[in-house]
Length: 377
Image (cartoon, rainbow, N blue to C red; front, side, top):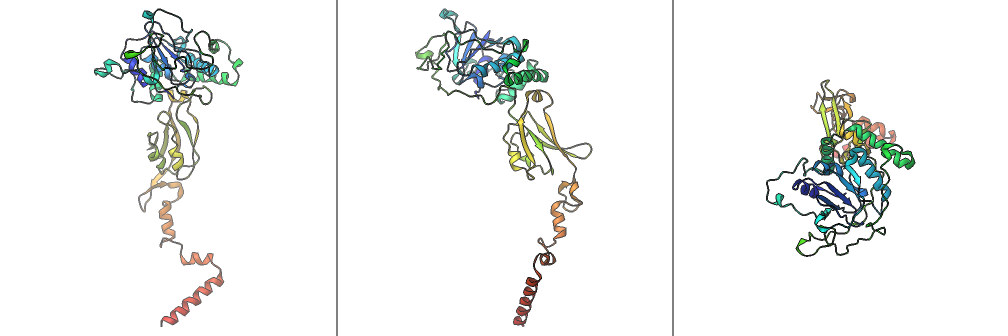
């Protein structure tokens, strides 16, 4: 998944753009007008994160335009339809490059080779409305919240996306009127070849050389967006069939997405923070009972609303013998103290062993002990 931190830093250091045009790297680069910015994506935009346009808009851009894709037109159409369901007319299709005078052309950069703004180099500039040290999902949640997009909008968008993937004809009415992508026309390479083999960066719609170059960008292979374009976060829902309250999963989570807290009733509650989860599944791998499992990807409406999921409530108490915390449903003592009480020598008693051995073998062992005793005397 392409990272847009450098793009956000660039937007934060400049006056707001009228439009930010996104184009796949296998299409012809865009030719933006003055006060517009063209971005050549690292791969195919059809694999972009659902929160990309929201972050760009939060940093001052008035509109995000997307050029039609020659490789994955249907998937990109679904993604743009989702963006438009969430953000309205602030996301549009780019009509296509036109031949314009140089002095009216905007800047074009490769996403993976964005220049560093001068204002940033000399300091005195903040990271802007979002924390650039946060990951894509965290920034997207903050961006959607800043734009007033909540759980209700995501629920509706997910229904539209589900209808589009189950059958394109099922999407009718105003919600689906913008689904179809424009036909690949003038300026778009239908065979997917890069029209600029030299890798030169463009700033006015034409290849440049010399000091104005910002470097070559690697030609990444086509990104195949996995699955359908319905909203989904980076974490997974978790399910617990039985919980002992040991807390191993809490300690195993590197994102601190799990917590075990005591309630007012004296019970202990295992909670899962859906926003913090990143699907590492360490908790599933290290569960001592093997009863913790990962489910589907978290829906965005849950991320935007009630993002704390209660997995289990366990009646934990302190063992009166050793003080260790255990599930009181197991008995009066913890499992270790119960075993020690039943086996004071740390192993099965001779009587218990005798019950598991045949009587003939027991008599043979006793005769052998008697002979050893006589030899000793």
